[in-house]
Length: 366
Image (cartoon, rainbow, N blue to C red):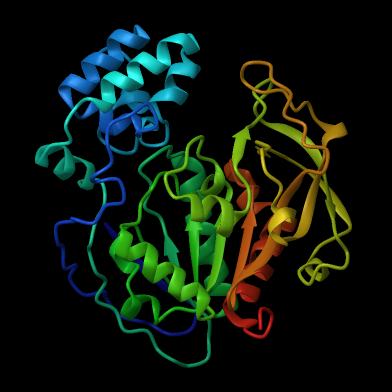
């Protein structure tokens, strides 16, 4: 649904009606079934579901809906069949035969229609003022893992920031906002713990063009936390890092955060601080794409052990960074699972500085 407008100094009025259109250009519409398919697409096809159930030994009618349900939000939207099989302990020898069986299935018109149902083309009827104040789109469409307390805390925090700073902000969970006309009204977009592949092919194109022309992006926590990606550009070029896990023994731990004093956003922050959160580890380091790291995590101050006892140490462990795509300014922070982090003074100061930079420092990427 369309969330209310929030603003700092000017009432923007009520948004107009949404213009809903059926989606036909979802990214995986025509892809053959395979063990690299999103689990949700396999579960939506009765024969693919039967084959996967037999190969994995799982009764999908009895597994938790939040994990293997076909109505978003669901983990099935952010797991491939292969990753799911590995998670439940299926031997690798069973994967290749299942892959062959799935690839032999036809992709029907019904399959294509079901695959596209989780996307939307709902447009926003808004008219934002051009008064020199930053205009922000707070994007909140989540089809994978949705941690409602953290999403709600972040939502409230961003609206409070806008009120304090005099920013214009529109919040929506409709991906139809990602079109050239609508994005042209904004200086930056904020992805609030987005999980799952949520943009159509046309929306992806509009988003990339928005960044190339000088728009800003701010992503937080879950916006880089999916175990499987179905848009490589987003993971590898926009974020520059692929999530591999977080500690579970315990899940939330206090750790020391170090700040690069030479980073442009560092002046809003102390040299270091300690806080408690769920600490992400990544299999790729954003420095490889030229990202400038603002925050690094001191791995000696917490226990980086994953859900299966795996070692999640990265050595050099970035958790917040900036870089550029064309003229667009990109910021990502892995902080933000615990709702309390959105009231934590240093984190709030960093997010305010990052949004201001992403929305206004247009010469930063020239």
